[in-house]
Image 1 (tube, protein in one colour):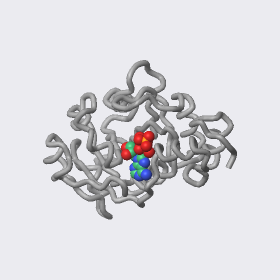
Image 2 (tube, helix red, strand yellow):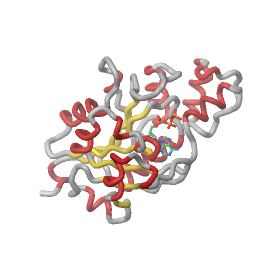
Image 3 (cartoon, rainbow, N blue to C red):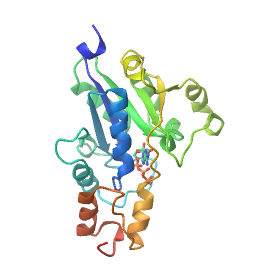
Image 4 (cartoon, rainbow, N blue to C red):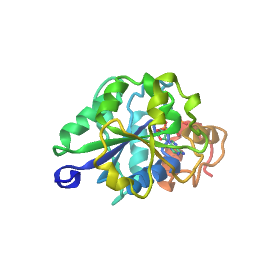
Length: 228
Ligand code: ATP
């Protein structure tokens, strides 16, 4: 029996999404398509570890992801990190998602190349590694070179495989701990840049879907000053 007959392959992309932007959405879609995933969950972090508190509230960030995706979308919003108290650890999210999936299902974790550089500091990172295949989206503003990575990640990175046309077939049979690199359409968009644009009164239109842009203005998030 193949993986497909017995379980699902579900992608998980966590983030602060402060705010969600077209870089997130495009990479999530390409991740799902290229790997032939059954579903792709976007998981906003309620209280993200290892960074300054977000500007927008968790509820606002969740709403923005919902608005960005819209109806009948190929991506799904997963609000489980807002449903539990405390710091939003990915390990707990994985375990909770795993419990809801059919037996033999696999979870694939997607992260940008910037996030991977700090992965060895994540809570329970070795346990995460034992549970998932990890796919790195190489961001144009964060190319990855083995020698620039922390020691703890170097040999793992050197064993990474490139996602190519064969991968969705290989993927279902690859063990947890496999590391992949995915070349995505380069979109050098970051939430930091969007917040800076808003705060300086400049438009973020076309960097994020219109419903998100509208919501930010209506609610005065990120110190946005004018309708543009
Ligand atoms: P910030 O600028 O506030 O750090 P961000 O734009 O990096 O935010 P996050 O919510 O922190 O967004 O990112 C969620 C995930 O999406 C991370 O794994 C990140 O690397 C990835 N990501 C964000 N923007 C892009 C992009 N333009 N291309 C590819 N991956 C991205």
